[in-house]
Length: 348
Ligand SMILES: C[C@@](CO)(OP(=O)(O)O)[C@H](O)COP(=O)(O)OP(=O)(O)OC[C@H]1O[C@@H](n2ccc(N)nc2=O)[C@H](O)[C@@H]1O
Ligand SMILES: Nc1ncnc2c1ncn2[C@@H]1O[C@H](COP(=O)(O)OP(=O)(O)O)[C@@H](O)[C@H]1O
Image 1 (cartoon, rainbow, N blue to C red):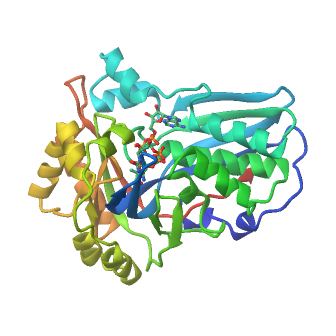
Image 2 (cartoon, rainbow, N blue to C red; image 1 turned 180 degrees about the horizontal axis):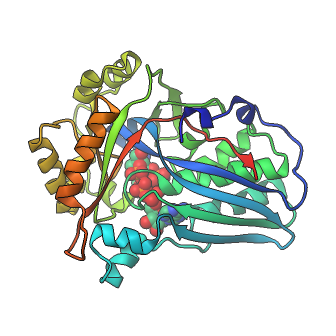
């Protein structure tokens, strides 16, 4: 996917329900946190944060249609398949690990179902939805896959039902189901290349960017619970602000962005999952000092200067971490570029 997959027409929204039987499709991009500071612990169990997020072109895919029967029929598959993924991670012979890392719920606990049920209730939608979710974004990786899927499904439902993509209720539903979800709607439904998020992550301010960034993402063979990582974290006495990353993004200066990057959840995540510590140290030793954790982990990423450099670093890291056999826990390494959210919802 590239930036052209976002559409202003889509963002402006039209308000005619689509004919019965119409199938729509969209992509749900992952995100990375270039900066994440904890500013305060709140009484409601959340933290006030200051974070800068960028969407990347590592995407899940959603195909949706309306059904006359009420409720949500959700199917979930991995793309590439679970088997291919488990082989790359070196866990193909370990059903418990496959379940822990690749077992995505297809019931009412999936964030897609939670979002669609709320859409049905809030807008009094008759009937329900059939949704096919093809996963590519690792789960429990700090890449916001579930949140992005939910926002994408909500946008598909709005398109099918003739609900304006600008309806403030879409934003409200997204904020109810997760702190990260509103980011994936864009800002005021305008395409977003980067955002500074405050509050618990739902208050969004667009951040100007000079152009796409090249990135290498490394997903270690472990998934982390966001709640557990926050619970193990500490709010620093003098929280830092995201200002330096914001200014560097506007300049498009990879060196400056890299030096200003920081993630306060890194230390607790490295303690909870030593694989993360091992990967970070190894990439740092290779000269990429600014490689860091995204969100609450477990994925890490390194900003690089070009697509060619990304490919080179990715092949080095694959040789080191990916498994060609069931030789134990490995990692999945992918090159990526920053993109914009939301993606277009197209009629198939
Ligand atoms: C850490 C971040 C950084 O972007 O991303 P992920 O690593 O999850 O992708 C986010 O803050 C995660 O947002 P999201 O994944 O939507 O989390 P939520 O479902 O809202 O919250 C899950 C749990 O994490 C903790 N939580 C979450 C957000 C926040 N600002 N403070 C918190 O303390 C709370 O314990 C909460 O119950
Ligand atoms: N659509 C979904 N995709 C992936 N995981 C989901 C989804 N809906 C619910 N989940 C559950 O949410 C957990 C974390 O979601 P995810 O967004 O992938 O992680 P993170 O918050 O680290 O970015 C998963 O481990 C899974 O059990």
